[in-house]
Image (cartoon, rainbow, N blue to C red; front, side, top):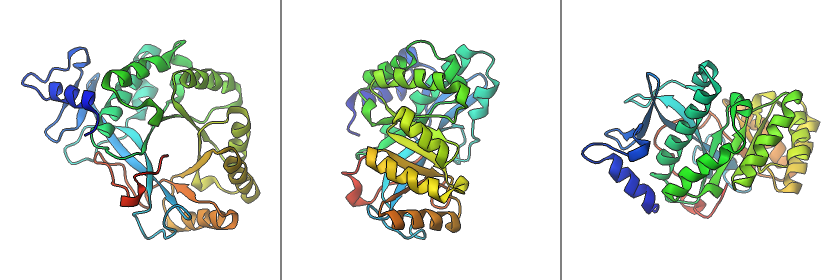
Length: 288
């Protein structure tokens, strides 16, 4: 582990009393995974890789070791056999905005600890922002997470905060939150409903990353335009929910036609797990 402040913090959590000081709601299990408590639910982290295929990786969908450029963190209920349940619904059911923000901060802390305690190569961490938080956050929500990262001496510039799909009348909220996170030095991602929606957001927001559901690529012209414009602006397009070879073959067709690599994430290669999937040896210099 190359993060000494994090190593010291984990040693405190792993001490005789398992105390982490003011972060005492966090502890380690026997496998070294950080856990936390939200009401009566014990939480931990799972990570799913984002891989690159094509000119920067391998084009073969049957080959599961294409270069890993990032991992996305997910909150899960704790399970010894790594089969915990997805917990975004906890935010939907949280009793108040304050409790929603508290849960979000707990999850971000758990993901950061569980990611950086394992990683010793140059790869990014993607963290989703729940739709409820767009309205719940205060004037400088990003600084709270930045302070935790500073305390643990973890690199905030390797973290991509991923905004949810929003409606047109939520656009001002999206811009407000994005501006807040930008001012705190985070990289920004946005989720789009489809290629046309992604094109509109690309022009308005100019994020670092746009994520599109691979199952919604019914507009071939719009998808090609999105990939061209994103490449021209240095914006990465990541296709999520790639779950079968047919969907992936369509992505490969776009990449081959435009001469661009394909960034993809999905159950075709990876299920979210607490232990990080390792990159190829030659991917250590690649940054998401």
